[in-house]
Amino acid sequence: MQLTNLRGVNMPENNIRLIRFREVLTMTGLSRSSLYRFIEENQFPPQVQLGDRAVAWVEGEVQEWIAQRITNRRVD
Image 1 (spheres, rainbow, N blue to C red):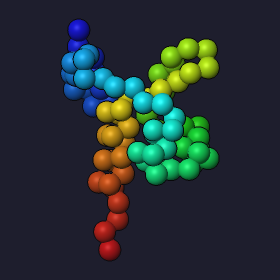
Image 2 (image 1 turned 90 degrees about the horizontal axis):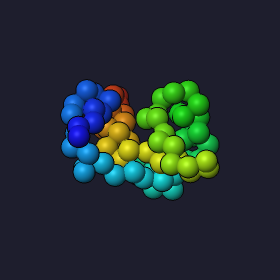
Image 3 (image 1 turned 90 degrees about the vertical axis):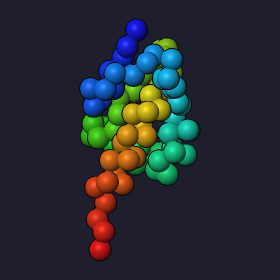
Image 4 (image 1 turned 30 degrees about the vertical axis):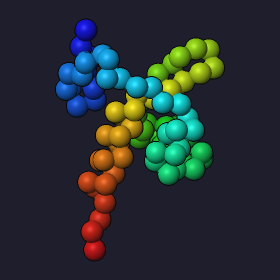
């Protein structure tokens, strides 16, 4: 089975890793409030619902978000 990421690229299902909130904070360097703000403003990859009160993110989508932020940075 193939899944499609945000850029429309097919990804093998076995390469998908879900990461939880604390790991997202560590990867991005964001504070809790900043991450919640990005989520609220739909400026962060969507969450995957794992259960009634548990969510995670697709690691590759978070990495793409970080890479896009690096690409868009201003170089003075």
